[in-house]
Every structure is written in C-alpha cells, then in structure tokens.
Length: 135
Image (cartoon, rainbow, N blue to C red; front, side, top):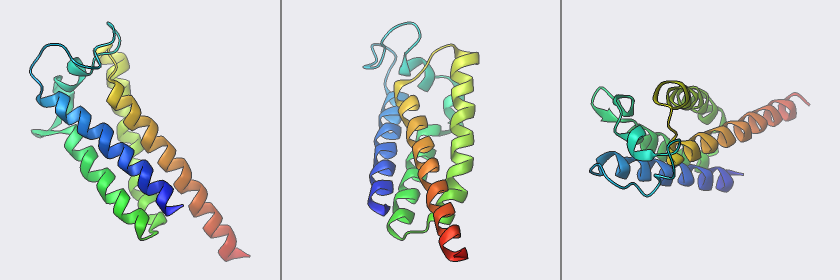
C-alpha cells in the first residue's frame, strides 16, 4: 500500500505543480479555461491563491512531497494526522471556488480528489492496524 500512497502523492505533486505554473502564467488563455465555470487562471490569480505571500500551490507541493516520503516509511498514522487538515483546507478552497469565485480550477479539483482518496486509504489502513493489534 505504501507504493499506492506514494503514487497518489505524486499525482498531488503534479496537480499542485500545474496550479503553480498557472499562478505565475500571465493573464490570457489558460490551458484549462474550459468555459465560464472552469478556469484555472481566474482561481490561481485570485487573492485566495496565496497565504502570506506564498502560493497555495507551493504549500500543496510541499505537503504532497512530505506525504510521499512518509508513505515510503509506512508512517500511516502520521500521514493521517497531516491528511485530515489538508483535506479540510482543500474543502475550504473548494467552498471558495464554488461560492465566492464561482469558478472551478481543474488542477484544484484533481488535488481535492487526490487528498480525499489518500485520506480514505489512510483511515482504512490505520483502522486495520488498530484492529489487528487488538486481536
């Protein structure tokens, strides 16, 4: 399972890297400017795309790299402790996209799916570990 989690984390790194690229792209045609509801450029140039001057995508890249390293060490409980607040933050950002900006970012949606899947895997792994140790 550690390799599955590692690959999922790398997908998160890729999605966050694409969002970071979009953050620094000059305004204009975005490769994920699909329609009026899907435009990564609008999302990644919004004030919500930075935290204290640091692009949210950089935080995502760092977080996914840390989760990838922890997966190789099979530190599933530590990963879960990090994944839960990461999922909460991703859900907050999705709320901003849906209810404040009115526009979705494809890369952000992929990242949300990635951290959601990783969190579900980690909950299952930790619960299985607890049940096995109790038996």
